[in-house]
Length: 178
Image (cartoon, rainbow, N blue to C red; front, side):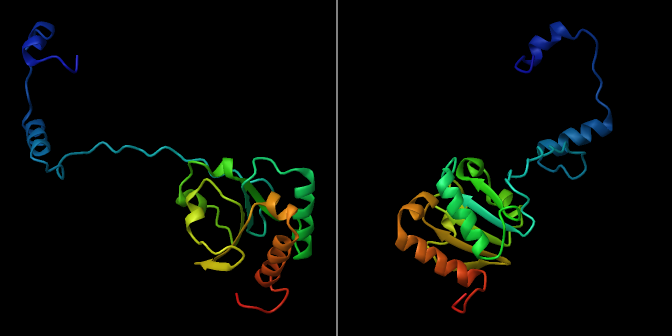
């Protein structure tokens, strides 16, 4: 029916149609591009679900990891590192790259993380923020530490040392540039 012409509509609508003066003004102003006097239909934006984070995330520490699932030995290494900097896994939040895929930077910022530890490549715009791994970066009130994937760190002792040195600075366990 939307595609029917006025001539075709005359066969469907047999009564006369009257246009009220206020409707005429509204239609004319819409045609002229002036919609100030007409009530506009407001399209409501769909509610966006927050990014799901595993853990309580009570300390504002967010761990982003490349791997869909962390092997038990890699998870054990991560737990030990978090304990070594004075926190527990129950205080942090974790999200995999798959969870962040197709999410906006606004969705990410809505998490309101204070410290972000990013391991590996994440399918999210957060990857583009900084390009120097193992250096601490600040963006507003959020501190970032980007590193290799947890699996790569687990396999390489030199990467473990680099990560540990950066974590010590980030969590004020030793002096250094922050």
